[in-house]
Length: 252
Image (tube, rainbow, N blue to C red; front, side, top):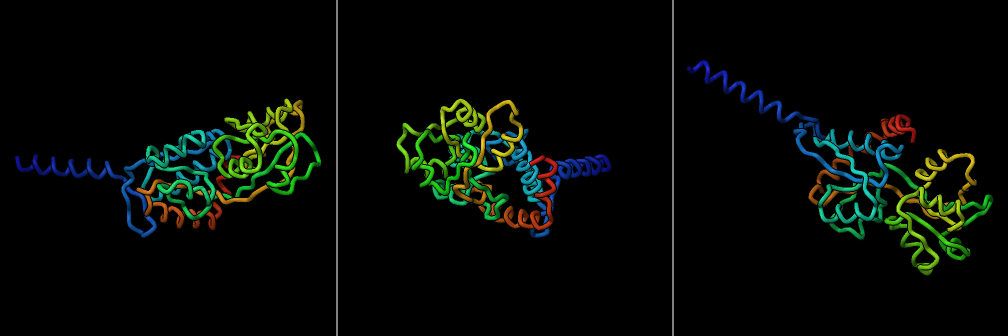
C-alpha cells in the first residue's frame, strides 16, 4: 500500500513538471511557458511585414516565457482593444503613439525605422514635406487609423479634400482611377504592394519622404516589466543579425 502511494506521488510530480515547461529569462533564471500574449498588427501574417513581426516577437516573448498569438486587426480597432486591455498589445506603432494611450507601455528598442512616403501617378514629381503636400491641389488619401498621417494632413487640409481608406490596396486603387492625386503610406509596406502589382496597371511612383519614425511594440501597462525585458532581448537579437535573417525568410 505504501509502495503504491509513493508511486502515485511520483506520477503527480511528473505531471506537474510537464504542465510548466520553461524558457530562460534575461536574468538567467527560468520562467514557465504557460501564458499567452495576444498582440495585434494591421498586416496579416501572410504578408512579408506580418510574417517578419510574428517571427521576431515569437522569439522575444518565447525567451521571456510567453507564447505569442498574432492577431490581424485594423489600426483603429487595435488601439481601442489594447488601451482597454482586451488584448495584450500592438506590434507596430511609432514612438509618439503612446502619448495618446496612457495605459500602453512602449518597448523602447525599435524593430524598424519607417519612412512615410507620398505616392502619385505623376512620375518625377517632388514633394518636400507635409506643407508642400498640403499646398498641392487634389485629393490626399491615406489608411484610416494611422495617427501620424491623420494628424499631419487633417490639420492642414479641409475634410472634403481627404479620403480615408480601410486598407493600402484601396489607396492604390484611388490613384489608379484618379479619384485621389496622392496617397501617403509607410514605404516598406507600399514597396511590397507595388512590387506585386500587374505591369498592366498604371505606374505609381514615390514623390517624397514626408516623415521618418521608429516602429515599436507596445504592451498594456499590466506588462510593464515585460516591456523592459523585451527591449533588452530585442536589442541583442538585432546585434546578432537575427532580424535580418527573419527578413530574408519572410521576403521582407
